Length: 280
Image 1 (tube, rainbow, N blue to C red):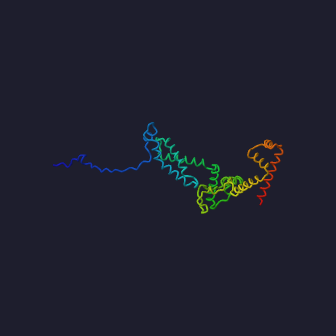
Image 2: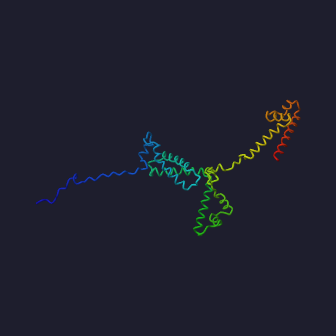
Image 3: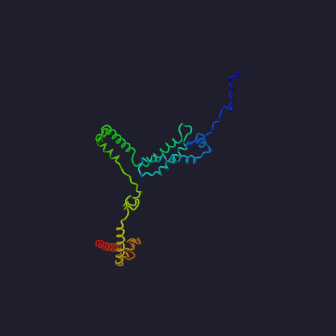
């Protein structure tokens, strides 16, 4: 009688070798703990430049997100430079043993650096911004409860402010618009010039004043040549050679009071002629 039990095939024949499928895993944006320890230890094989280059796109991503809520005059390139400094600080201070990825840690540090820079450049006091947020929150609350835009008295009552205090708050938080003076003018009359070139300079001398002064200077030189010789010489010694009246008196062998009279007479004559020329 034949046995119904069949001998089991050996493992080498029973086990089929499954085809090997090679999948390329996506590049992990985070370095492993061993790489970070290698960087942070003396003589590590991972240098700071490699880490910074790996995560530079993260800085651009954070800055671009913040830029969406900022005014147009804020320069994104300046914020990007500040974000890079935040990334450098993150690379140097990251602890790979903590339970979070470097990307999350670096995003927080970069965002914090950019926000600190914006606060530093902010012309608006933080106290005033806090008041503006309170007023906005009060308006939102009242609109939801009343179903209509609230009045100033209703807003003031909700904020527990007096009439004078509420008026002072409104002055502090009044909106101010910024215009970048480096932008080119939008009108055709501007000719593509920047706004700061179109703003009048209060210290600049008008062209007509310059021309008038030049004309009066030429007229004065002509009138000085028409003065008597002693008056012309006294003026030249006093104003061009910086001589004192006493020294001029010694040159002409006259008294100082006489030289003073000659000087005054010459000035009065010139002033009269210039006034006459100006009024013509």
